[in-house]
Image (tube, rainbow, N blue to C red; front, side, top):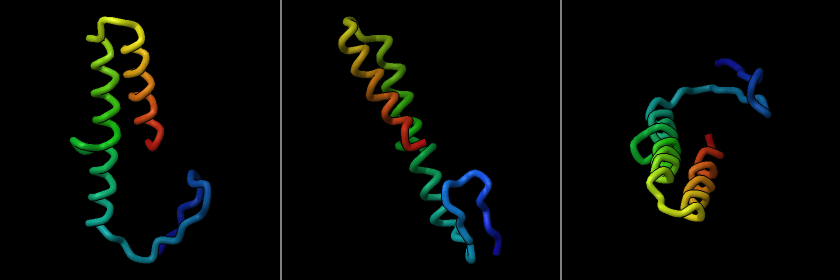
Length: 69
């Protein structure tokens, strides 16, 4: 159908769309149990931690959860 290669590392050629798979993939990134939601939970919980070590651990985990995005 069309080729998209301006942003991606490797060119792709989409021959047939799959809306169900696209919906699943998007939910893994931005859904309630997705990467972004998990990251924001960790990053917001760090503000309630009483000591600096716990804050640092939550900050590291939250930042790591952002990596796939």
